[in-house]
Length: 297
Image (cartoon, rainbow, N blue to C red; front, side, top):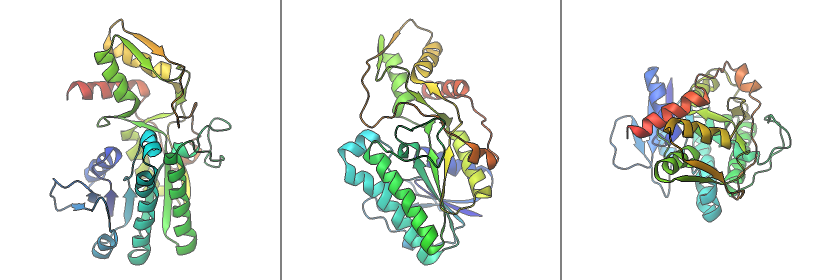
């Protein structure tokens, strides 16, 4: 089986590339990075990506799209750029698949941001969508494009709604921010009340879930939650970091909600479990591994 990973130099993309390589799959990486040369790497133009030449040249069984922007604040500042990377790019990939390799399975990494503030917990894939940011809207539109290409052109598509991803290699978002603040500040100030919650999933569990999707999903234009079905407060994970630093620094929440941020998330992962998923890395173990990774940089 030959897998094409678009966005192979990004956080999840790099982990997916290494994982499938370790299983002896034929893996092609594809990204905008220019200072890298390898026979299993395809460079694309960051400003005018053309996927037709890829699918015309290579026989691809599975296309995993890990590309795109992953920042709510930046989507608010630069909405067209976010739309181009998260929505238009998906259409361009699927159009190339439709034209040259309609039997190729297409997996698009979507986001729990499509849910916004859910009406009930846990969040099922059938829940109403209320995105709170351009990022969430553009991810929702990309899901609709995946449905379009399945329903009208019979392309095998699937959208994975990734919840709060973390792990070694991620140099942004909450855990990176927490580490830097514990390292450099006497008082740790964070947004919100501390009671906001997330469903965290380590990147190693994400790539294992992707593998199960490739093997067992229907590819009928459906969406699948990628999470652990667990709800941890920001206060709890901040205290986990505190424990690992062994110091007397204090944590303060400023009671301000960042624009575009949801309050509470916990996924219903019945569909994912039906594909065979079991969590391997607990939040406690995952944070310890993350801190060890940063310490070794």
